[in-house]
Length: 204
Image (cartoon, rainbow, N blue to C red; front, side, top):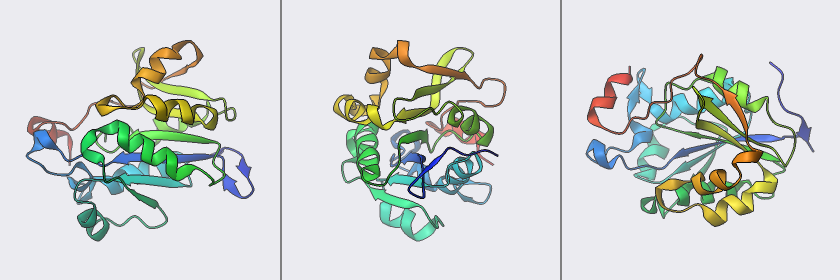
């Protein structure tokens, strides 16, 4: 598999996994620790990013972060604790982008821990849309924008300034829709979320 260029020995695109959610509608079970294939879900999500081409992965943790540190095997990952995780996904996105500052990364490929139907093939497709720090690309499912999303470094300040509540980068992406490269992934991935007890049937 071809991976993005490196800058100063650092891979140009870093994987950024948002895994801080507390699973409120799951009875307060942190999504990172939900069991999937015998291991915590966060391990699966990291593996997907790596197999899709992201050699560097930053993982934003929040709910029961100490338990995640203790129970999940995440060697080589940069673990970013977000003390403000209860404010929503926006705070985790800001914390993750902050953690990339000064690392040499020129773009971030953002994915969510609770979407196990999105695998390495979708990550690789979106990663292939990288064209430098101005890159802005998103997976699409039957034409509807979804994850993962690729943000070149030129967009990080703008994304962080507008990321609020559970909206994440939605406002920024809506404002810059004309600049987004949409990468259709509906043939290789399913973008469902693990939000409610009924959704747990998607986990193995």
